[in-house]
Length: 139
Image (cartoon, rainbow, N blue to C red):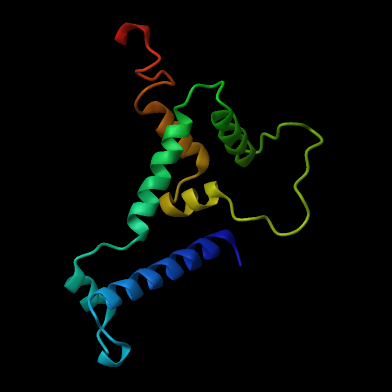
């Protein structure tokens, strides 16, 4: 099972829980045999995966645009470099066994883009690591 399947299974479980909650709120029993589409139109709620994906992308963009000396920015940059094949040390080796599902794998599944492309898009947007609070002109 690859990481995309794991991500999809996680979203399927989340969507199933969301549907169960909608049915409980609307007081729909399983014996009523009402389709999920009808429950969604009845409640008017969007799928729960949409805000999760949006917030995941917002956090990635935020960490990308942090100052370069911030540990979170450095860790994310190192991970993006590793996806490009640039390892931190020549003697670096991956741990044995199946690779774990990582946050960047989820971003890749959400956006169908490589982490390097996401990094370039996020770093070209907005501010360049300088916040309004740290700017001397706003005081």
